[in-house]
Length: 214
Image (cartoon, rainbow, N blue to C red; front, top):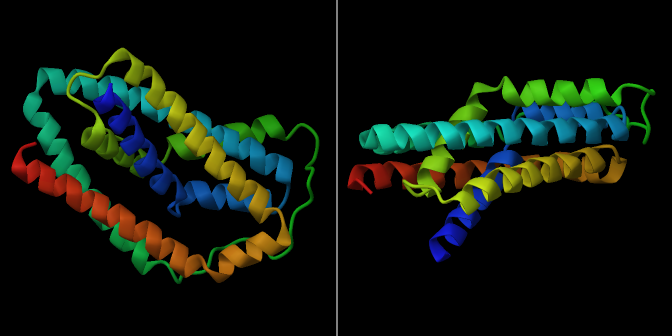
């Protein structure tokens, strides 16, 4: 039970950092939120649904592959770790690049009937990003045991849905208001560097674990 709890906490922590790192999903939600808070929240829900899809696919695929080819477990750790180091460096180096969002805060409510379309756009943005699939596979490989218990298999997708939806809802609420949005833009470089540093350290941990064969 302790191992299951630690695995779930490890995945939750890593996925929180991954969700908070800048990328296409963040930009899409930010741009939507400054136009309409309601549409921003619909996009956040779409991001959560996309995360749920990735979680179920990665969980099922990795479990089957690990049981069939045990060496694949270490290979994914090494390759995934190297990619996360690369991604962390990219995030760090791009910390000072300005975020292209509108300068005027959006209205709390958008045009009627756009919620479903914005939800689907958020879902498509999340699912169509190949980097997200690599990050999910890498994090799952780092923290999941070789044989995943049923309780963990059920809890992981639910936790990831809550993390993705929760983070992007915060983004939508914050960036649809003038003061919090200005504060984020002012400290963007520090926030992005922190996210890049944590991502890089996670990648190094994966590479080292693969080298040790654990």
